[in-house]
Length: 130
Length: 282
Image 1 (cartoon, chains in turn brown, cyan):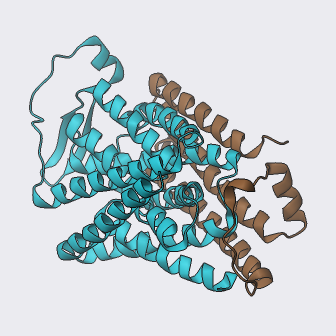
Image 2 (cartoon, chains in turn orange, green):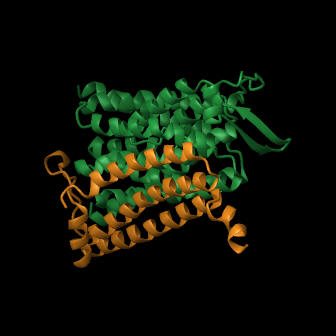
Image 3 (spheres, chains in turn blue, red):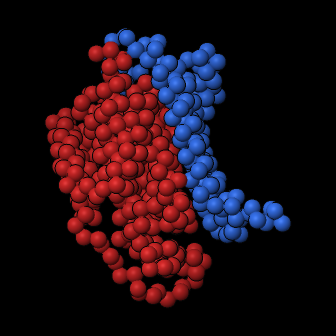
């Protein structure tokens, strides 16, 4: 009985909104922490406009984890961005759940297709050097 | 200039970009990219990378407000997102091959068109004929292409028309999003509202639902190419996010029509500068 009552609540539109809000809040806090730490360590150095195209900023999930273990501020900023991207995955997954709860298989399938494309793209960005 | 000063100034400019983006309805991306390029001489590709992250954050931050209003059409949003994501990935790959001056010129033109679209909205509330009842074809019933929303007059039903056109426009919006680092909300709303006949409120919240996912798909490709610089992106993201929140507060308390026209003029000047920069550096 209790479950039946909860069911429409579980995958409601509000839930999608709330999860996104919490996700962006977590991301912003971690990015802010990493940024403050970066400014504390390097804030007084003279700003140099990097010649980007010659030394593009490359990293992977693996290098990010190593950076986190060394308390590297850049790794924390990246972790914040990573959480922000995961939040978008959550948006698709929750929408897929919303459709399955409504027994709408067609749009469940459409959501899975979007999920697949998004996972592919995010993985391309973060897992390439693993 | 020290790193600290650079970060602080960048944060302040990103904040104003967020406010203006929310007030004009164009989003922070269209303002932060030219600002980074014109004021900080930052490489266009990295400016776009920073903007993409800000766009995802802003769209997610606003989602709760939109979702609570129950205007979002999740079905049509997800369906069109397939096209938008494919476009976004294509756009993010294209930027690797297109020369920068060409991208700057495209950016300027898209900016000009977006201002035109947003000003049109202030002058006349466009209403498309929605009463026309379409013959219930098999495909329409299969995709369940209609929706309902709660308006002041009660529960209103709307029909979704011209699906292929909408899908095509949405793919174009995705390409522009990936190529220019903007949410391309103006084009998304246009295709949902004018092309497909969704009510304006449904169109804006469905567009917001899609923007974050589209931008995340491009951001993944940008990360893989190394176009997202953490030290420059963090003040941009936090500034635009806070600015957008301030902007939407202002929108609730007042209808700043004159302010919108002033900001549209600022964006117009930036668009011209982007086009000029592109043409002179060819």
